Amino acid sequence: MDLSSPAFQNNGLIPTKYAHQGVTGGRNISIPLAWDGVPAGTQSFALSIIDPHPVAKNWVHWIAVNIPALTRELAEGASRSLMPSGTKELYTSYGDAGYGGPEPPKGSGPHPYVVTLYALNVKALDCTLTASLTAFLKLLDGNVLASAVLTGIYER
Image 1 (cartoon, rainbow, N blue to C red):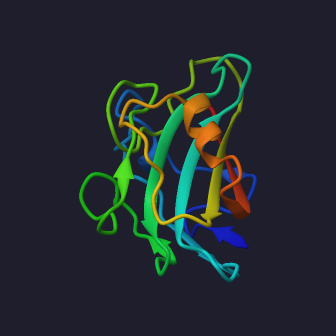
Image 2 (image 1 turned 45 degrees about the vertical axis):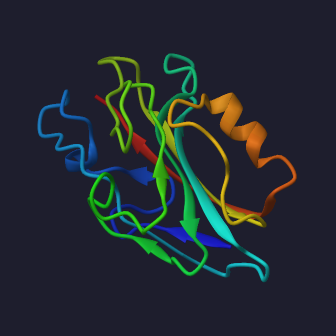
């Protein structure tokens, strides 16, 4: 499976407009994503954006589950308003549901924002909006047909 964004290349810089509102110029607009090469038998997708930087400690920026199997893209700004029908956006480390853009501490260096798309063999994951990253990853066990990763970099 291949995952891409028209906003940045893999290991490229994430434009500031996608950063959290706490960043000067940040508009907290969810990044546009597109994918192809979906394996046969895919019944739904799950998506996560995690910052694994040692300072961030796996900060959750976005988790979306139950994305319909026929979906091949998420438009810029889709979070909270334009998500495909049936999609559930979980709470982030910011404490609210939906996309939360990069906002690394000033001076902490470049942070990687790891976007992972999972093709699943189930139509829906049964999880609460407040499920932790650990609980989300546990729900994926045995249900992932394929995954794809796209990493963006952001620094303040």
